[in-house]
Length: 118
View 1 (cartoon, rainbow, N blue to C red):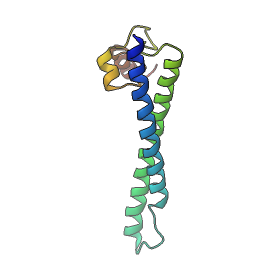
View 2: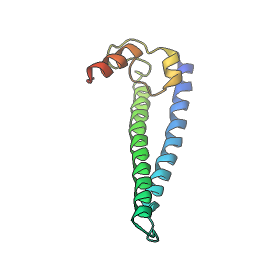
View 3: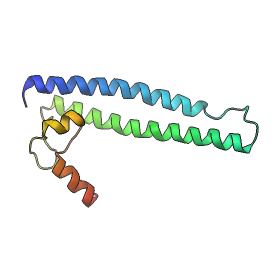
View 4: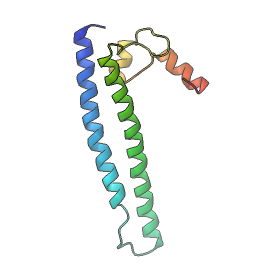
């Protein structure tokens, strides 16, 4: 992969990391604040607790995505970005455009999904 392409993906990854960090922090704060002392009855409390659970689930997914982005940034530093971690073949640019933190080519990602292992 050419240096200018890697630089483009590096910038996309940094922006995605910044955006996700902000969103995860916001969701976690909303989750902590979701259940108020002023809930009038058990129905209100259940509704608020459900909202809190959803906020934490969203922040968990965000943290997983942040980990994947950090791993992609490490691959940029190690000059292995854009190479499938499973088969060592280049990852198609269209895939990286759609998922800049992709660690595997489509064929390997589908195989892993079918097999349930890496």
